Image 1 (cartoon, rainbow, N blue to C red):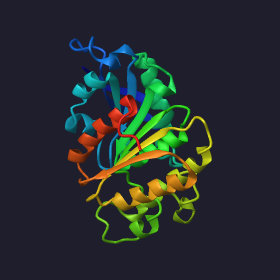
Image 2 (image 1 turned 90 degrees about the vertical axis):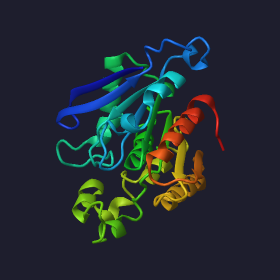
Image 3 (image 1 turned 120 degrees about the vertical axis):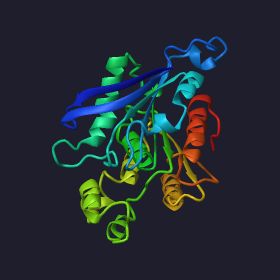
Length: 267
């Protein structure tokens, strides 16, 4: 396992940005018996949650062990509290950053495969929302999406933003992040809109979703899976005991990688 901290200038965000990377290119033991090393490395882009940063996954999950087990490279961008969406202001194009610029930069810098079948995106909470939204917005880039405890809050936005007791953020934050609440559900900031747009395409990302039964986001995750079923968009959904924490996410990242790379746990 190789570990990198990096900084480069992002034209999407108009500033230097920081990222973390974990690579499998120096694994020395067990390669001969591991079928994952008989193919090119896969590249997994992991998105953090609200109030997190690019080091969250590395700090809380043994990414080095997983890189060596599955022959994958992990790339961890910093998305601030953007929900990985574009805003109209200069320097706030987070969707463009994570969906195109960061992928292009890492492919060039680390000499990665540019094939969609070798490119996977995943994330937790806000990053789970970003995973679904980014994969559906860039189906030509990502072949698979691992969305864990996704913050699928678009349909409840008016209630969430108007709740004075909301300790996470105020209405100004939600309006800046998602735009006009009255137009939100019909806008491209809604993953459902993007899913309907590409459902009949032969180039649509495969989706793995997971959410704990005690997680406060379980209902919107169930509702999104039901929506995908209703339009004929295939997706795997796992739910079981768990709350909104890294105990659940550590286990589900492994399960999601087994689903993506070994064909396990499919509906």
